[in-house]
Amino acid sequence: GNSVTQMEGPVTLSEEAFLTINCTYTATGYPSLFWYVQYPGEGLQLLLKATKADDKGSNKGFEATYRKETTSFHLEKGSVQVSDSAVYFCALPSPESGGSNYKLTFGKGTLLTVNP
Amino acid sequence: DTGVSQDPRHKITKRGQNVTFRCDPISEHNRLYWYRQTLGQGPEFLTYFQNEAQLEKSRLLSDRFSAERPKGSFSTLEIQRTEQGDSAMYLCASSSLRTMHRDTQYFGPGTRLTVL
Image (cartoon, rainbow over all chains, first blue to last red):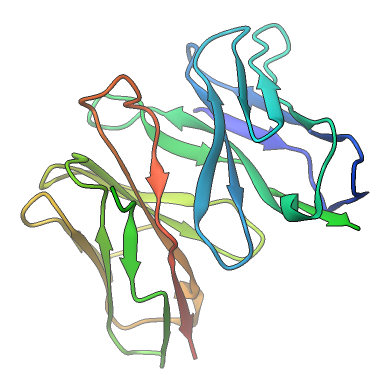
């Protein structure tokens, strides 16, 4: 079945440092790929998505490019802020018994801490 | 559009008690998903509804768990005879098959269950 392997944390950076969180996937076909963010004590927020190969998703300074050749969807940000401290999840849809393909399979998450 | 809401946000119960959680999806979203997230892990799929029909249940959903979505709007997740292993964050998400973003799920804040 579809799966994601995500870089394990925790990741600790200083403010304004460059961020990369690696994510690789295994999938049937070419599903959309997602990054979700979870702030302490909260649910998940959609950060960005990409729907096909070579697409770049972007939001709030974060970017990720759907790489079919390397089956990767690495998350990057050029200059992190203290407010970016959170857990980041890579995810992709998986087949459902009803015939569609939308339930999400998540990585284990990467905890990012940004220090001032 | 007020987003996905869940109630309660926190629940502490004693082993053996029954608990019920409620999820109100984004208005007119016809898909509703339940996930469970344990500490340090990514969310895991439990079940999903399309309108009022429950189309799939994960093997994680033991006989003590039951979910309903009687009018195709809000959903409830009940756990009978709770066990300490049920302690987790229960997340609800909704999506709409009627838009081009049919594969995008929007999450609520979650219900954190602690079983003593």
